[in-house]
Image (tube, rainbow, N blue to C red; front, side, top):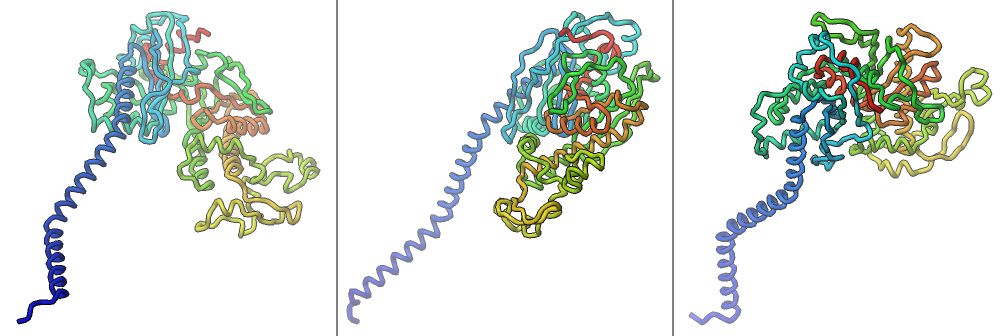
Length: 496
């Protein structure tokens, strides 16, 4: 047999190398892959731990602060709303609380104090035996000794309810060492809102605080009556024709009154006076006369839809509206009748005839289609014919203009609703007590201006409160007060 040629030897050597490589690959690759996956998993865990450790420390500090607040020698009232959780704290010496504390998953603070709302109150009358005997059951665990002095400080604290729930949930996974005081008898605190039921077990577990649920609407009314008794400086105001907040004096007689609470939805409450219950307590005599689901949640939900910005929040939507011009979207009376025709009709030419009414005359090609780029469509000029002119060039309305029109629409709906139910107060030609409260109006100057403008056009005055967001928590606090809400209203006044 002849010896193999050089080419054959090279071919056999190559086959051997390939076979050896395949053997090694089959032997080592699974182990190598497992090792790489393990390293990647370890690095991922280290990275996540590195990122989450500061946030966990921040949440831990927030929980410690909240535990400290709930253990303070004073009286608490809480309101766990669908959006915000609020707390009012009354004590002899104001406990230093940071302006903001804690951090949630989206980076927002867990809570914040509102220094501009803080009050100093003084006792103007000693409690009577009838007041003490009519105290609510929840006030039995309130801190009577904290009210022995003549002066108290009131602080107002709030934070997103979702952030509080998130922190409580994370606490279940990363539990802190409990303080010895948490083994004592639970402290009872009156609370209102859905969270007074939903979060009751978690709050008891983490803070040793037993939430005593209070009727939400009754608590809001009690908060309004408490403010009327305290009468803080410039706490009640209306909005002038120029849009400027104007302080007004509290009415001497409060009843009957209408309270329009604008939160996610709208509730209209008519309060006719006070009544004595079977237990001897004095409670507001009220009824919910109406409402509408067109409120703050409607505004934010439609703002997300119209702007195609699902990430936009309430305050960002308000900022958009503040830069917009609703008349560019709304059809006004002058758009239909002209200036002279409006005067002949007896209506202001600037009155809104139809919200979003000008969009009706937009050409179909100008509408942003679901599968098209909204920004590209918004910047494409188009030609349209209006009721008063032909061939005008214009752009698709901006996000700012759309959200401004939306805000006015939601506000005007509540104003018209308020006017419709104001007839039940029995007065004509103004002078009726119509209060607006709730998160939608508390930090919303454009909504307040729209409500005041629309109510003024209908012959009445809209009244707003600086502590609008905290009426429920303040009402809950008075339910925890020694002697109950009646004793609080009789004995305490603002010192400023």
